[in-house]
Length: 77
Image 1 (cartoon, rainbow, N blue to C red):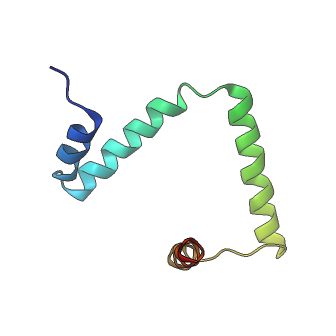
Image 2: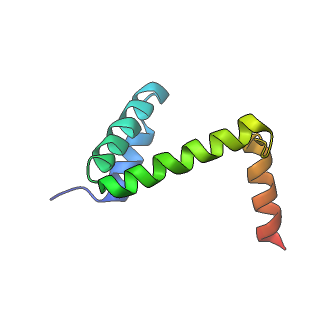
């Protein structure tokens, strides 16, 4: 009987952090292989646009912790 996604996830959590990271990379790579080239190209253009905005000072980067704190605050009310 095949394992469910939740069972696989629970087993993966038992792996050391480096192995979990390696598994995550492999899973992402397997998904990226199926992405439509037009979507991939649009994604790359958006990444470049955002990079240029940060480089020029039009936009700024926030630490992940701050972004998550703001998101949680919005969700709470």
